[in-house]
Length: 420
Image (tube, rainbow, N blue to C red; front, side, top):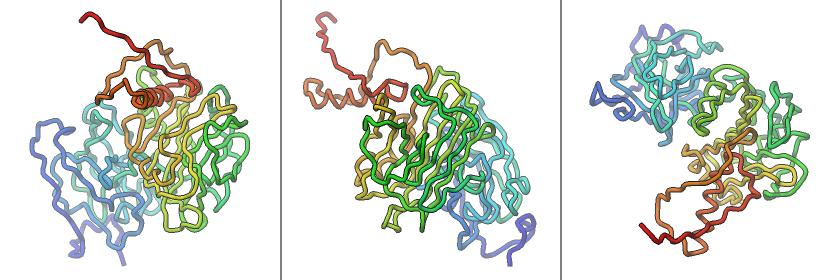
């Protein structure tokens, strides 16, 4: 029998497993560059009902820490997490949005998730700082007792699941029509409804049970957002879920992310829709796990899509990730996403320098592009046609996220420099 975690700190348990935390070397140095890496996979919210419950009460916390899961930088959850997760029965999460870089060091309350209450009690507050490069550091301190542990987030994924009251799709089916609480603009069309389809795609006018994707550009008569369109099967493994938000930390985080990836827009999100495929198997391959997420973000005038990729299993099924519109006036294929033997690399790919994340502006008024200045990070012989095509394709992919239609062709014009 386990005691309530509120009182466990009054006793000493020999069975508690603790570890020696690293020591901050320079107390006055910028913690963004002087921190201890904390890479404990058991801190993930996906680590439910562990065989051994961990405890951070007996850790010698000293200085600042940066969280990692399997080597990937993550942040502490700032929305409710499930009890009996993060390697313990009463996990700790950040009660308040993460700061911006310009905010410097801020203090945040820490909640204890327990007894079906997201904030059953409060632990000791901690300091947090946002760092250039899109990561955070935390000045962890001893929590108020056992068994409490600091939770590490799911990385780039927005919060999902029971803790945020997601709606789950039925097994091997699709959602019913979802009425959007705010209109979503998508390349010239306004939608008030959406469908989350189990085979990895979002549609607007009608659900789709198609499990064999067609290649973009398809020049067909529908708008599609494909997180990972393939033959998925959640009957025996995995959950497909969704939720939408008009306030709270998720909206705040969406505002921060879009302003980071699309500077000078002064964007302020008013609505966020999150669809998640968590640990879903491929059809007839129940040993596989595939996790990804599609996030729609809007302020009623401008709209964006984030596609987040976690562990993606390879497959022989046809696959496709990206988006397509009627007559393919706008479309995009995430490089490598149409090769089943290659898609495990999606978790490391990005167009915004965040591994596993792709971001696109799909409605709004981007600045007109008159000229482009490019700095190549490595030398390419641009006298060879294959190298020219590669460079132009990379430039085009970068411009597409700002609204450039895929139908536009880029050409390289040679100029001879005569005078220095």
